Image (cartoon, rainbow, N blue to C red):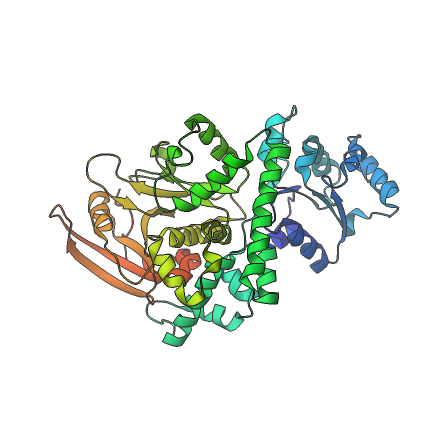
Length: 464
């Protein structure tokens, strides 16, 4: 499979001030595969130590000298290690978090050796650690599941992908290609972007086989929590994940998880799921200024899961025929479409940073909500998500009037277009702004398309 993050790994290897790299992300998003592929492409001898499978490997790092550590590894593996042509890979490092402190010595005493560590529950492990992280001597790398564009490439649709990323409102896709892209979008909604599930779908085209893998992965997450996160009731964990799926697109309400469980327990469990990257929060923002998180309200947030395929498995959508999937997407009131868009927006922010998403909701008086709020340079851009080809935009009109913005994005089932809006809000205010409408499958290209249109709309964005 082609992973866009591979290019960033290549840049890291060639960087003049390379630091040991800590790769973060939920279990089975493809961290190990990415490192193996990286070593193979660059002709590096991969020294892979899985610290969860072989806990005794941690004892090889008893010394603070990288050269002594390498001698220990050579003796254990009966293999000569040449730092300039090798890559040391500490996989599942959350099983031996004390090794984080050793990374500083590789940075200082053996910079010629590329060192990568990867783990899926690092926050749990680090929370219990009695050492300080080597701040400034390591770099972080965040990995999400396959994006829709990566899914399209994995499916053998290279030519279609090239047409998608070149599509603009002025040069839209021909209708047959738009239809094909929407078909791929529906496939992705069921299969998702977890690499093993994607590969199984490509090999078998059997969604029921994919469903088995998805449920096995959910079971693995539950086992992880028991092993690394302490005693968390498996039944509660299941109900939280199911509630996230059912509350997609809405403010998350703890009491809806289980009325018989106290809210603080649910709140803590969801926090742990978020730390493990199994779930993520879409944080409330006032949308008044930059940065977006400066004026947030912790009582208001929406929740997403790491992958839309796991959502579909939870909701039982795998038994739905592809021909009937549109009706299911619509009956979900746009929740699945919001998960899809959120997943693509998160992927565009990685691997350089831990992705963050924001939304806006009126916290008093009249109702109103904007699905996502983007910070694009010094611009604030609201994003409305529609699961079908039509839908009301009353909240968007009001938001644009109140915040005095000039450009907005709508994601729906229609081909790309640009419209100069001139309307009145429900409060009778006149508002004018530019609406960039894009099909859902172009969610991962919003940033590039905004760049083009902001260049042609001087002054658009937030008027400060």
